[in-house]
Image 1 (cartoon, helix red, strand yellow):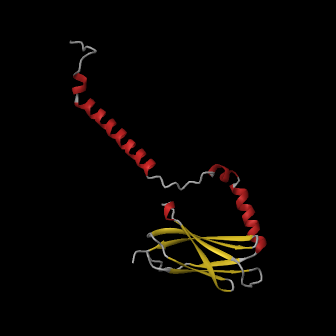
Image 2 (image 1 turned 90 degrees about the horizontal axis):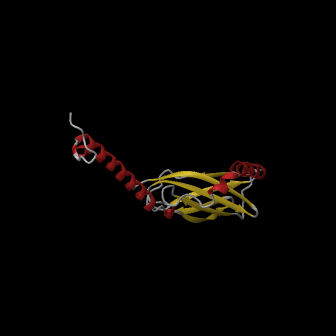
Image 3 (image 1 turned 90 degrees about the vertical axis):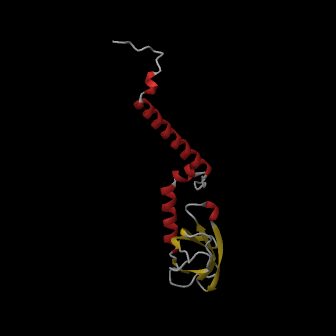
Amino acid sequence: MGLLSQSSKKAFRNPWVIGWITLILIVLGVNIAFISLAVVTNPGLVSDDYYERGQDHEKNINTRKAARSALGWQVSLDVPTDTTLGRETPFRFTAVDKVGRPLVDGSATLHAYRPSDAAADFEVAMFEKRPGQYVAPVVFPLKGYWRVIITLQRGEDSWELTEKVNVLVP
């Protein structure tokens, strides 16, 4: 029975040892590639003050719900089903007060938010076509899903409405 010396290099010639070392190196290489890809292509979609905003999230939502209830506004957004890439599409936002009168003299803004790329986000000011109806012609630069946020400001009061839009390829 021969004793193996500590300086023997035969272990590194064993196919099992070579296979395990190769497997470990492949896993480490893939992890390094994924980490560097994540750092280089980070879209920066997380806000800087996410912790502070999250601490009072429930309280903020309840406050917003109470304010909406007190206003009693009824709003709706006409989301076009044929929203197409590069083509102008009109978005219509309608708002009435508690008793059904159109909300006039408001300022409405359409904010298009791209969940996968913050650089593609844009805003469009809406104009009042008739009392209580605000319209904005929108041209989306990229296909796919967008989040459209309409903000109506009237004096100190404001209302926000969010919808998801799928932009199709012509």
